[in-house]
Length: 182
Image 1: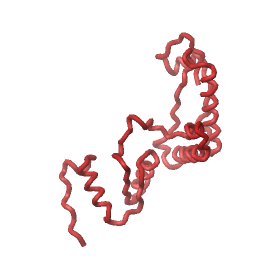
Image 2: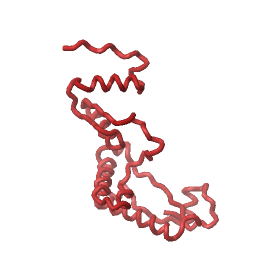
Image 3: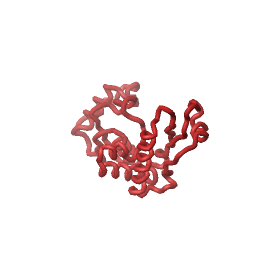
Image 4: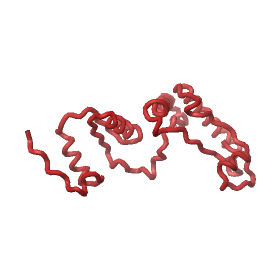
């Protein structure tokens, strides 16, 4: 049995730092057996690590970068159903993403994941063709919801909004030329 490592200085015990990362990685490699190893700390990996730790399991989570790497540039903090995968014809990935979203919303983390409404205002800057394409995308997302068997009560259907409804939801919008919203 090897001697225990000296305790970390009080200032490093709970803060994330380069020194703590180095120390934690050294302790994890060749250290005690853990219940769960999570590789990749995107939304899914971080969620899996949190869920496992919340269940009392010993977890080691590793990523190529720090946990918050790229957060402001790349992360919208949205759990989505995979419309971007549909747009690139990755139908299997889009379906899997929608299924995972439904599981998070209805079983695993309903206290953390909820439907977040948003408005796409149909202003003069949005052509009728662009609006039609956006509406088709919203309907495709709803088809993913249906295919994933996520309840309508959990994830409401997309809908068209009048100009008055759109202005009520987004009062800072200029009324001139407003056709409504999605």
